[in-house]
Image 1 (cartoon, helix red, strand yellow):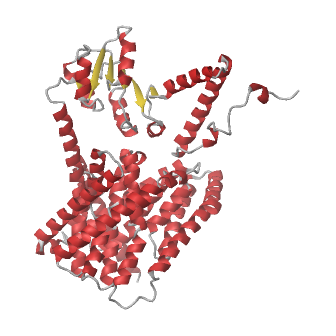
Image 2 (image 1 turned 45 degrees about the horizontal axis):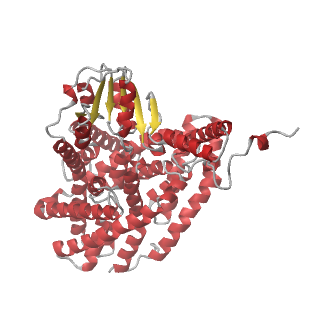
Image 3 (image 1 turned 180 degrees about the vertical axis):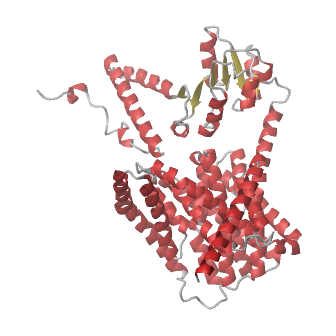
Length: 598
């Protein structure tokens, strides 16, 4: 028995070495090609799996272990979402998310029914799961790019979160259509709904009265290893509770993360959990690649490729339309449609449930599993296509205009020559400081030239373009761009490329200030803050408030605003420390009222 156990351990060790080696090779290759890590993991799994070279065969066992990567991912996302912020997203979650699942589910059901020539019950069991997207693929992309803190990123996340919540009703629909004898162990759909609500409420209570006190206790011990153990215990315990109730383990981990979102240990938890999340999520995609049925693809290649293409086109188009209904900008709506156009990992779970319910055959489950995998593999190419079309549109708009490589040597570069950039430029030119002006809007460039100002065309956030403009010799680079596109991920490479330059950044609002927090820039400036304060000062004079009192009000407001901003940045929640805001029933008391009694 001991020799058998040793042999099993040796086989497991060999499998892990092969998987990690293949993953390292292909992820490195695909990263260098600009195709992202996910495609590298999928190809590595398909190559070494049972359908490829057959070096590793335990694909399903590997998948069960690697699913912990999704659990950890949702926990980390929960840590970034304060309950108040999550409540603010309720309309997007239950409005945009619900509409996406229903519209895409119905359209794909019709496609499967006529395209695969199967019964309506089987088409529903396949079409509805195809409406779900890959949380494991999309969320890491949103987190790494910082988009999850933008409005479009929050809406994409809202759709993904509702899709996770929809697992229970989808399982209920499949159970209602089942042709198999009822499983005495599995609870009915209505009971799963009750379990879901009860489990979420229970996790919320546990977070307040058990998890937070636990981390306060662990924090006093000051042992990093114990902190890692406590973090993993929290994630796995919440997932285990949901698993015991036949519910989504990822949803349980997400709720646990939200409960710790305002904890002082949030950042420490993120740092400790992230390495486990990265490796397990990578192994999850490797396992998906291992399960790819190459035989099913070989038997019906045109059907698989055609159905995968139809899936992508229908989902991208319908999500674009739904996003436009919710008044998203055209380019952002199109990007979100492409980002969520693939099938998702929960499709495999629901296909297995449909197979157990005798609604579809094992061959159909493998065939549509292959379609989902191919659609997931296509996402990096779709995002590359989207970036290419955006660049083409930008180049087409600026065709024939001079780029900054034609500019003379200057001491400062101003990126963005709208109303904000013009004011900054006027002040610098008043002291004879030479400038290179860059803007990406042809109409703005043409208008500026009518006033005798030479503005060069280009995307001033690109490092190669800044180099061409003389960024390596500039003493200052000032980003005066409208909107909230600049974040930590974009600014850090610029600071690294031009360390000699003082970098100043115009920010759109508090959200962007939070997103850019921690970047070592020379200064950040909210575009309407100072002018709003100045108007407020003048309005107070209109009401005969003394100059001394106006100065005191301004000083108090600035102090409170800075304290609110610090709390918002720390917790990632715009509603943090809202008690510091002045309200109709909460004004600044007169100095006489604040003075202590004699």
